[in-house]
Structure formats: structure tokens, C-alpha cells
Image (cartoon, rainbow, N blue to C red; front, side):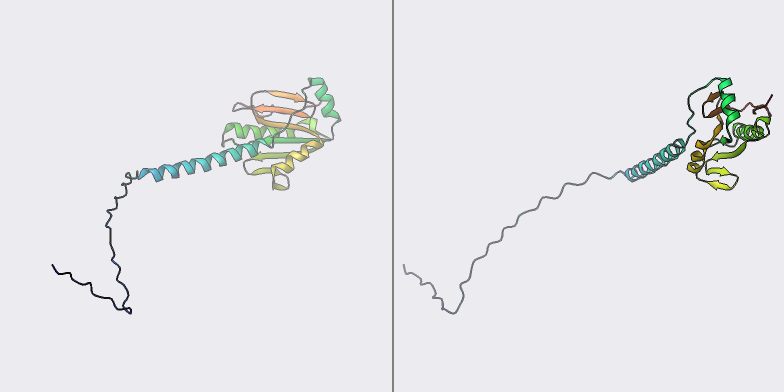
Amino acid sequence: MAKKKKPEKKPSEPEEEETYTLDIEEEAAPEKPPQDESGGLKMLAIGILAILAIAFAYFFLNMSSFMFVAGEGVEEQEFKDIFSSAENIFVVMDVRGLPNGSTKQNILQCGVDFSGSSGMAGKNVMYYSLDDEGCITPDGLTENRYCFEQLENGITIYVTEGTRTTLHENGMVVGIGSDYAIGTCGIHRK
């Protein structure tokens, strides 16, 4: 058998390289589970609830951060003595958070009734009404902080929603509800 000669390569010709290709089948990516279309709505609802919770907390924390701090409780005669020697009296009608109803109107009426009582004669009396927008003074609407800072300069008659009246070394807290008889709030001289 005759041997075939390999063709001689010329030095100027580059050597051919054999190339091999390997075809690999790629596995298909696993299918994503079908998206629940209400998932986005649930997240939106959770977001809205979170915002409402923050707003609600801010409102009540801000509201409660400015409250009349009643001093130590005193007996009626001691309160009369404190009141009679006080130069400055603050009548505060707190209707924050109350709907427009009889309790709100009664709290405001009680404050008016205090203003007409004989015990206020000769006193420097300031009237403040606290509502959801701020503190209403004779000079107009201002921040609650201003009004509460003023209360340190005298005796406070703090009219708010409640059922009882308590006497303190720095004022009195008058609780008013939906049942109120006009003219029953007041401090009278004998």
C-alpha cells in the first residue's frame, strides 16, 4: 500500500486550527408563579393605613402634649383663698377633638358663664378657647404652646369634657357633659 504524503504547508500559510463547537441546551428559567394582581393593592392599602396611623398618632400626641397640668389637689376653702389672692385668672375652654354637639357648646357656654360671675370682678381675666386649629385668644388664633405657657402666670379655670370638678393649687378642672344648665358655672362672691 502506498502512503500518501501529507501536503506540505508553505511557511507563509498560517496553520488552520480545527474548531469544535459544543451546543449546550440551556435549561429554561423556571416560570415565575403568577402574580396576584391584588398584591399591589394590598401594599397600597398597607401604605395608606400606615400614613393614617402616623397622622392619627401625631394629632393625639400633639394634642396631649399641651394639656393643663393640674397641681396638687386642695380643699374648697384653700382654693377660695388661692383664688381671692390671685391677680391673673385664665378661663380655658378645651373643645379639641369634640364634634359640633351639645358637649362642645356646653363647654363654651360654661366659659361664658364664668366670665359673668361676680368672683371675676377686679381680676385680670384672659379667655382662651382650644380647638382643633389652635388656641383662640382675644387677639386671634395662635399656637396652643403660647396659651399653655401663659397659664403659669396665674390661676386656671380649665373647662373640658368630663363629669366632675376638681380643685387644685394652680386652678380648677371643670368637667362638662351634654347635660348643662346655663348659668351654673361661676365663682360668686358672698
